[in-house]
Length: 387
Ligand SMILES: *Cc1c(COP(=O)(O)O)cnc(C)c1O
Image (cartoon, rainbow, N blue to C red; front, top):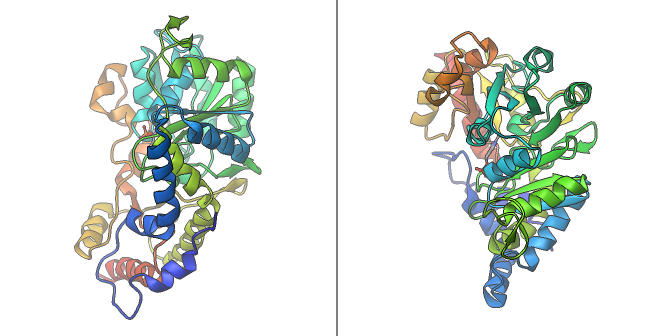
């Protein structure tokens, strides 16, 4: 399968003398244009063979992701959220148990813990990487703790050696929320392959996005793999014979067909994201901005390019006014969400995340972003600081 030539996209898209008047945060239409033929053919093939549930494309995609992550197994499920939920179930998490998670993440990380009747235990983050601070984990471990669930936020992995050491010491399982980090690496190992189980999301806006919902669990543990397979089809190994109560959570064949095409482009796309991040780092240096920092042990794939600034809301309004797509990931840390009031956290419980939630803003870093567009974003940010 030919990889899309992104430099070609850069030259032909919008930049032919046209001046930039707006920049999207992400443009999936451009991505589709670059691989239209392959995608259309892959979809047509599924429509023709009509094996919509766990068809051959799902198996191929599972094998490709397992091989990409260097794990023994990969199991497609209906979403990243389900990947987390089913992984926790497979680890035996249920009512009364505790799961340690970072307070700065997408809601699903905490939602799945609650939905299993277990208690999310929120831990503060490192201010530079936005990831779970390993120094703060040990004090939150109790007799009820079953799992540590680190989140590799924005596309770089957590300090996994420290987390894995703690898990070993206290006999806990590690479930990686790698929904934003497919292709990221920690000491040359792929995100998702470090803990007991790794979870991915193929939500359209993720760095490997489908054309709808989708998710995946990877593991090298055969018993856990077996359990996850069981859980995704109502707990039945043999149709209509149910050993446990599971879910209906499978990756659609159509999504797998699309993702098979896109997976071949992922490394090229990640490199473009990194290049774009470097250009921002170079040009925004010296302003009153905290730039994203890739830790030395990490291969950061920049699912998001997130900066922290004191006058965030003003910058956001300014960029929006200029037609620049930007987003706040995330405005409220999980421990301060209304639905978790019952857990008793307060303002001040996780001060780093609380501060960052008021400062962060993510700007366009997608692979097809043109040079002109990126310059437009950089100029706008510089202009903001000249006021
Ligand atoms: C996107 C995301 C999820 C959930 O994935 P879905 O496929 O949308 O269910 C979970 N955790 C994190 C950190 C995410 O970014």
